[in-house]
Image 1 (cartoon, one colour):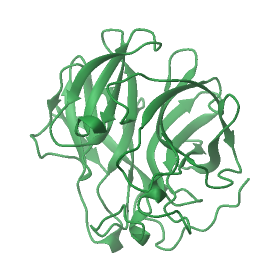
Image 2: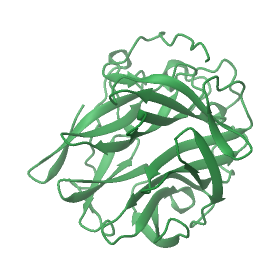
Image 3: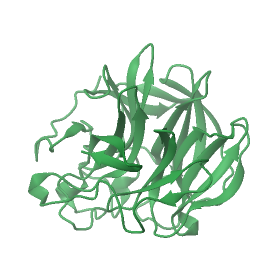
Length: 323
């Protein structure tokens, strides 16, 4: 196993539950529970403190999928990265060995009743700028969360798609929501009867650009969260087809921010685990962000990120978030 480097230049942020010990760039977490092996976290392992990541936004690319494990969903230990092999991906406790010319982003992991499926954003190479690079969502499958067989890229509305979210809906169909950057960074949706073929159903959430949709059921209502880079918008639905925004066009949860020294900043790209006694929102934040341009290659400490967890509850029909 790799000997993780110290990640202490700013110390732990208030409320953090996990930081990536290799590059200090854990983002886009997804958390699942396996009855035999416990809790697993899969996340984008950004190269936030890589000594020489390349120009521009190269540090956001060239990322692997980091993996952590936990006995309770709150205390996490680094387990390695998902590295390419002949079949697809495998968990390597010694990863990442070197920077590779391939980018993996934003894993979504779900269980279909018989096996695990992962919907992963793939980008060729290590782009140093945002524009001009196709992004595709690819399905992988696994029986044990450690070895993943690669399937085909999904045919969606464009070749600029990222941030998959998948769930079984009230009508029995599976739906996949995703950010379509070619359509102004809104949330599109596709449906499938069998997780084999997907049919586009248009735009689910329009308006202000956003990313990272996530859909879950709580209290007899379906909810969607989207990341607006200033907190998360909340939508509700009875059928997962028609959505109404909670609180109006400017309302968000996890929108609090303060001085960089306090380590409390807006919540970004999260997912929800509904347990018997609580709904937990796992999300990431840039604890020491000073309001500047995080994506710059010389942004320093502001690039570093941490995974946090918040509690969700419903009060008088409104979804409330407690850090």
